[in-house]
Each structure stands twice: as C-alpha cells, then as structure tokens.
Image (cartoon, rainbow, N blue to C red; front, side, top):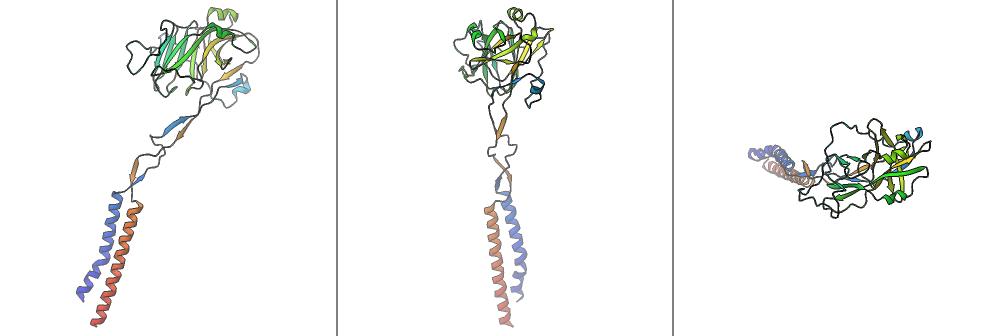
Length: 312
C-alpha cells in the first residue's frame, strides 16, 4: 500500500512542475505584434492646401494663419549655390532644351536646405531660400526671366505696373518637369533686388513694391518686407509659377496672399514582429495538458482508494 501511495504523493508537485515548464517554453517560442505607435515605418501622407487671400490689416493678422518666418539676413559672405554641371552624378539627368547661359539650374536634395542665387539669369537678381523637405525627393530647379508678355495678364485694379518677371520650374531627378507646383510641402522665401524701372514706376518708394505670383490667369500680391539698407524685397510663397515685382501706388490696405503650408497626416502601417509573449494556441495547449494531468490524478486516486478498500 505504501508503494501505491508514493506515486500519488509525487503526482501533484510533478503536475505543477510540468505546467510551469510548459508556460516558460510558451513564453520563449511565440510572438505578438508591437504597438505601431511611433513606429519608424509609419508613412507620412500630405494633404494639400491652396493659398488663401486676406487683407493686411490688424484683424487679418489675428486670424489663425501660420506666421511667415523672418526675412533672411544677408551678410557679406555669399551663400554657395548648388549648381548642376556637366560632371554631375549620373543619377541626375539634366533637363533637355535648357539654355544654361540664361537659366540657373540647381539640384535640391530633400533633406538639405538650399540657397539659389539666380542673379546671373534674372533681371531682378533673384535669390531663393528653399528649406529642407520642400519636396520629398531630389529635384532640379530652374530660374530664368519669363516672357514680357506675362505683364499683360490680369492684375489687381490698383496695380499700376508689373516688372522683373521671372519663372521658376521644377524637374525630377530624371529630368521630367513636375507640372503641378501649386502647393509645396514647405514655403520658400524669394528675395529680389528691384530693377531701376520698377523703382522709377514706384516713385522711389519701396513700400509700393510687392512680390506677385501668377495664379491661374491672374497676378496675386504677396505680403512683402523691404530691407531699405540693402535695397532688397522679400516675400514667401508655398507655390511656384511666374513671379514679378508689382507697383501699387494707392493708399489703404492691400489684398495679399498669406502662404499656408500643408498639414501632414500620419498613417500607421503594421510594424515588424515585436515583443515575445505566450500565444493563445500554446496557452490552450498548456491548459489541455493540465486538464489531462488532473484527470489522470483523479483516476489514480480513485484506483488507489479502491485498492485500499479491497485490501482492508
């Protein structure tokens, strides 16, 4: 009888030991998905917005519109311009049909801010500050004097003249022109040195000069700041097209376009396998094994009790 009771004494601790070992095994051999929050694999999609038109008054500045960044300060040290040459990387295909004697061509990498100096190719001595991530891929920017015929395109009624017209086009790394440049990921800053003709039309008053962009079939004025000491006029824009220096002599507030950058939205994507933990299938296996051990123990206990009764 003692021999029959001895396995019974070992059955219960043995069952717990086996179940504990199975749980440890399950925790080491199963995977679950990590929470995708903050995953580096998340992709960013960007919604586009159009340029809104407001009136430059105290009420307009109180609206919830992103404040344009400060006008860049120019020093005596020139900012280098990344200009494409014939020895450029083979991964960059120069756009065909360009006259590089009258066109400034610059390569812009997505993660590097670039300053383009188009003084040699524009009458207005144009300088463009392009922040990082203006485009998500490598692009090629061209700056050149636009046809003078654009000066007859519709302008606001109180604009008396359009001068220093230039064009900005963008191409991809393969040399194919990007047609839709109406909404950039980041706003750029354009600084011009107004020509003598523009200053003469303004009567020498720089405050009458505005940066203008052609939107559709009409010119839209931009809020413009002036550096009177250096003779520079700067404005921001979130879209590309033809630009000019507009002369407006009348007093009162002027309708100017306030650049509105697009708002990025984040779309989560499934991450790779993350932390290790017991899976449901293995936990079910552990429970089934425990059930078998319990049933076996009950059967052995009943069998042992019956033997003891028969022997007594």
